Image 1: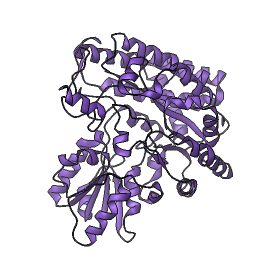
Image 2: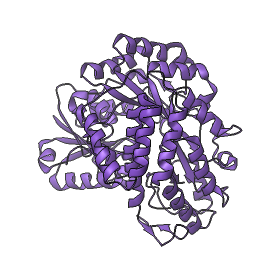
Image 3: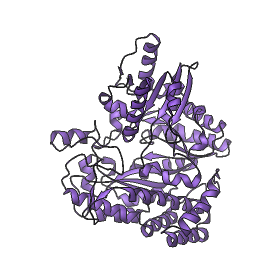
Length: 507
């Protein structure tokens, strides 16, 4: 059996970091972890190939080679996934689809031969058994939650690791919180499930022996869901593993803001090699957290929490949302002020979107305010519900936020503010990877000579060299990120003229 695993193209968003990749000579941020894990669950005797369309084009010869195409995607990859499915149908290639997009929207893809939804460790073996017996059905689904001990080490040999900026692994699934707008608990439940230390270090070892050095993203939606196990077993084990191998990796992940309340946990994470954490801050307006059920963000000084995490040795990346029913007219200025004062350089701001299956989707449907499906993009190109705020005010305010926080002046100010607050533990360990020296010279050319931000670039360049020289590589990294963020923001197709008059063009 010849199996072609296909990962559709990821559109140009803040999260893609596509415009930053050319500085370091990489094709994409991360490999398709889900497909690599699925590949490891297929029979060893089957021939397997993988095409990540973010790394190279998918050819008709690729498709003709295969007996089955296995495709996995997120909602944001829907358009590319539909194109792949159409090509398979034209060529007569059978399709097996799974992952978040097809789990949530499987009824929208009747042309797919077999849809394997839910957690693959449960549903994929049933499909494979029926396929072997010639009895494969169209839909396989299971609402149960798997034991992550059943998840295999991803089949890394199917990719060229040098095409990616970072590798990724998964430690846990599920989140103890249930925010109204979030679909994570729909997909993975509220009870965190985790891998054991031996299983986790085996995955780290598999990347180590393949020669990978540098960044690894723990893709968990809330890494600290089971704090007790982290502090008792997992983080001490990672510390030991890292020390024995000369600290070959550094890590980043996602967590809830209550991480700031646990100094011992942050200390262990930093000692283990964690340097960055993404946190869903969403809004500085307390009523927005009450409305959305984001209890972990309520009744706290969010700014102090962010600064406490930074001083503990973790860079904070933040997610922000406008469009809550409770948002006052001043929300846009408040978001800008919070982002600037926090020193959160990577500030991902989006308009609220109602994703199918979430409590928000269900509420808006009951209220008759739902207009369609959400795109899944954080640079959202459509408003899929009727907001309480006047639409032109909402979209105009959103545009003002992006124009302000990603202007070179404000962006570079945040970088310097972060570098003043950030206190990393392992300053002496910098992973010089292929392309990084070239990235420095490219940044000098494109940002320091040709770029409109050149004055701010050189100010950061010399400030970091003289004030925080050991953080100079990080300063250049953030300068490159800024180029990406501005490029994405500038590509949003606004209709209207002034920042207060714009509306987003429907997709």
